[in-house]
Image (cartoon, rainbow, N blue to C red):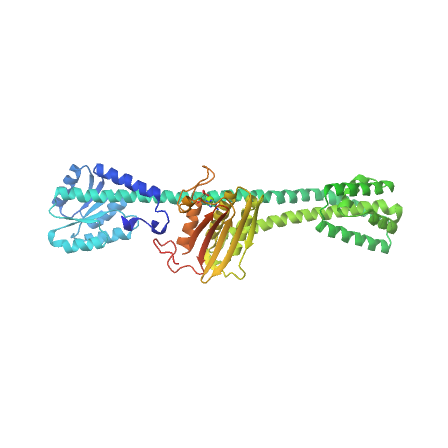
Length: 509
Ligand SMILES: Nc1ncnc2c1ncn2[C@@H]1O[C@H](COP(=O)(O)OP(=O)(O)O)[C@@H](O)[C@H]1O
Ligand SMILES: [Mg+2]
């Protein structure tokens, strides 16, 4: 079985559930004989029938093939649990049937027991080397037949279970990835919502604001302004535009006082809709002395038209600013999303680790916003590394997400990077409660979680481990005490030469 334990060897867990299923099954196989669907391949009719009778008496179902071609057609057409294969046959012999079965991923796992006469032991050995499970000497001994078949069927059964388990695990991992994407998109939707609403509101209000401004402009044009007055208007326009782009925050009380002062000033000059213009002029940071200056330039008669024009001008600039900021923020989020997912880029790239960390922070912003501060201690001139960009982001997401969960919304996360020879080291540290010593060795195990159902799957760190160790030939470790938990990820500058996903590749370092 050892060779078959797929590639769990460098996983820190050796899969508790898998181990359990194995023992269950082993216990079960000892209790009763396995019954299976057996294909007997022999050109000798007497041999075929003898074997069939023996097998059927042991409870198996049997199909017969008289040559190699027929045998291959049959294993392709229906599922067999084991094949009993004669070696010497006219046409396609046993070697070739075996070779073709082992070369075909769909047939590779069906155990083959070769039937050999005593003087064919050499051939039987060769068949075993070619991947046959076992051999059965002629003439047939019912006890031996039963034993060999039982062993093969038990192994086949285990293998089937293992495949089923691995399939299930793959599904779970994909589900975890989808769940993460789901959580991130919920956060992102939340982040997009405010700027989108602001832009939409601004665009809506601009419709009336532009109409109002055109109106005010028409009235102003009717006044036949002198060149000096036109120059003064130009100046006011520039001020309004600059203020809109850079509004000063004023506390609420001061703002009310300011507005009240302006409103009184306007009312005293009998300017219509003073209540409407006063707040706008206040946002514009106009003081009464600025209004005095306007009055001196334009005179009392023209003052109302100029004030109205100024107010509407400022309103239009402010709304344009609001739309620009909202859409700018949306564009920024979309850009981060693109970086995060590395949309339409090759899976293996020269990755800027900082870029990945930053886009992950944007994606997690709504989770980190309240009460959690993030400090970035990035190394200068950190080299790019050859890596699977979007999978690394999955690692950063899991680590930062866990840190935020652990701190329950309050605390500090430090992201640290450095180069260490041929390695790039990334640390994610938090000042949360820490991981109890007894759990530290288990956090990378699949399904280890201390979170309530629905909140945690226990797969985040396991998946991160697989990505770092197995896909990148790196290393991930944790050091934790109350008040400080630090995950350290070491990644080689270049991916190791072995093909990614190669089972059992030893992690370097
Ligand atoms: N920064 C951390 N601080 C404290 N505990 C942590 C931290 N990171 C991980 N853990 C522990 O490790 C467990 C496994 O993490 P993970 O594999 O991401 O699964 P999940 O987050 O779904 O529980 C968590 O449930 C938690 O108990
Ligand atoms: Mg997690």
